Length: 475
Image (cartoon, rainbow, N blue to C red; front, side, top):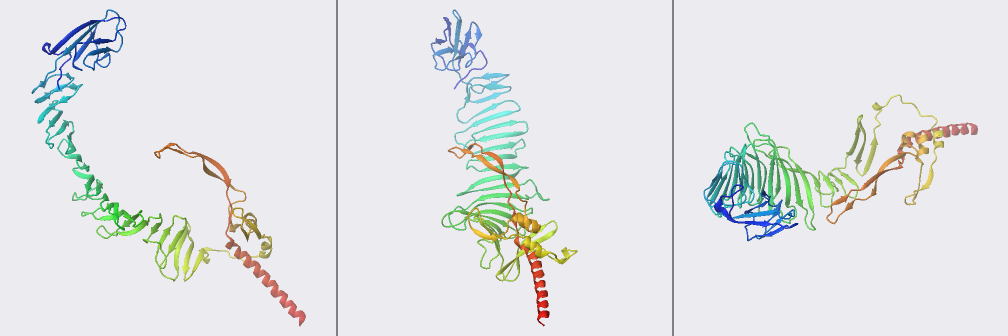
């Protein structure tokens, strides 16, 4: 490697000087030879810029970007290459290419348009006060670039590690040869990944510390056991408590589900910072969400299962009265589902302490007569059943019906689907629209029971009165 310093090299560096008289439209001029980047080209005495006004890359021809006019004078000056040994560059300097044999030191702005080549075991120091030091050693450990400027250092070590440092020498980040990374804050590791056998372990810490300066809350990301054995840990996130000796307060684990492949995700909690983790929630390999259990809760076990097929299983140990669901609103508990033995009760609030101004029902028979029970066919599948038309029943027992007759609602729908390319990337999003659809009414037929009971009592009263009259006539 070699180079020249300054815009006009020293005379002894001149290799050749050639003049050409151009013809109209001429662009290419054949020289006796040059080293690329070691030449100057002038047009009628004006210095031309390499790469902008001309190109000279094949060591022979100089090609103008804009064709010359007739009688234009083209001057090409080429220079010999040379080396610098223990050279100090003073003042603002431009270097196209430089072969450094010893130590190169600059004390002002230096621009390297080409590059720097150094032999083994050499050092280059660039700048004054804000240094860039380049160390080259084929053995490896001391092969690095170090930049000292302003508030911190930049250290790059090829084949060993890359380190970012503060001006006081404290590490900001390290990138190691094995692929592990540590990021620091206040001279403490806050984010860390490290290679350990077949897996990867990592740690992400908060900046909070205890009074004694010990590390407090942090998260550790782990992947330490990838053996395909049922129940084996496949990876996880561990949450550490705020304690002088931190313990795992909760974790999310990925567990191998066994034969057939698949994995489970478990969510685990801890009553104390040094206690034992207890599984609280699991998503199993089928997609079921299990709460308070590790398998389908049945046959006397307790827990909740949300099955991906769309049903919920609620199970409690014991055959005495057990509450499985409670319904609350701002007024308190308004309903529940309980089991006893082999029966289930669906209860709505009915305590007398919730009611006032209780009066006997009157005219129940007439209201029942106003009901219109019918046998009908369901449109969706053609099945026939007995029941009511909701809006008709609503006119008689409004509390038994939800919704309004002929109500409509807005519904979002996909006008055109998204377009996905062969890489699975969405190239065009789906076009969505809004349409008006029926808002169907519903009925709770259990709300008809009080009316039917009152009507039956009225009928029974009339029957009793008629039996008394018949008995009197017969007597």
